[in-house]
Amino acid sequence: MKIFLSFLQSEKNYPIPAYSFWQYYIKNGIEEAGHTWSECPDADWALGLMPQTKEEFAKWKEQTWSKTVTWLKKNPADIFLSYLYPDQVDTSAIKEIQKLGIPCVNFFCDNVREIKKIPFEFGAFNYNWVPEHKALSLYAGAGYPFIHLPMPMWVAQEYRILKDESNSQVTFIGSKDMQRILLLEELVKLDPEVPLAVYGNGWKAQDIPKYINATPYTLQDKIKFNLKYVRDEGLMSFVRKIRYRGLNYNTSPALSAKTYPSPSFELYNNLLAESMISLGINRYESFDFPLLKPNSYSRLRDIEAPMLGACYLTEYTEGIEELYDTGKEVMVYHNTEELLNKIRELQADPHKRKQLKINGQKRALQDHSIPNSLQKIISMLR
Image (tube, rainbow, N blue to C red):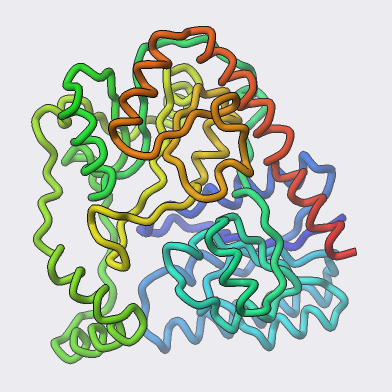
């Protein structure tokens, strides 16, 4: 089966948050499933994520979709598979592609974080690939066809070999944000000797990523933006945004001593696979929720770490029990006190750590792989 991809591909390296790994995962997953993929060579899908003027974005959108439809007319595919944000979707182009006999499926992984109401653009697809359990009711309420599948994660064969522990760390890898700071500061306060090691963007000053600014931001632009924010997100969210504007993102000396720069690709994989415990944090920054009562959803790491053979301890969130037999394949915690207790429990039980590594990896590779998800999508379309 030939799958046409619109998955944030680009030949350029843009100064925006990471996006290139998605095409790496999905292309390799498609090939492992025994299918082939194609793409329009002139389409720069990642450019649609760049800050730009309305005129520039409209030009990108028109040209990209026109090239894509033209390409598909000459190079037919069996499925159009995309990762598109709502404003990137051209519903008329989707209809044209469907008229060619090509069903369209869109993956989107920021439903919980970004969306309160499913946008009408997503109704154009034959199916929406929805990974977050908390987003299912939104799609059902909108009446848009969807399929609930794990995040599309792929790891190379050489990283699927179960590795022994090489350190006694509780390793967390992820960029710095306020919710992670609050959780980890509380953990270190409860036990300053906890063997925590934190890697990622922003934890060290020299490792903070630099993103470009959009077009010049005038006072009038600021007023329009804030009015739109209140209209879209609500007054309470705006109040929290103003209230939390001065939050201190500096870490304490105790936590700072446990932080490190972003690891290389090789070190990243080894840390997750070989650490005594790999830690997952599923809460996230949002002005839609009180600072001390954050929302959460299952992240990509909940698939990736077990696939790599990690002894994985992750934050509980709705739907995690559908992914794993918690306690046997992964461990979960609900709050900082329970996190510390689970760390201590695993520290004292090397046999349990080994079984979590074995069971978690087997479950993730068997049930949560891209080939498995593609088979379910193909079955639904048939």
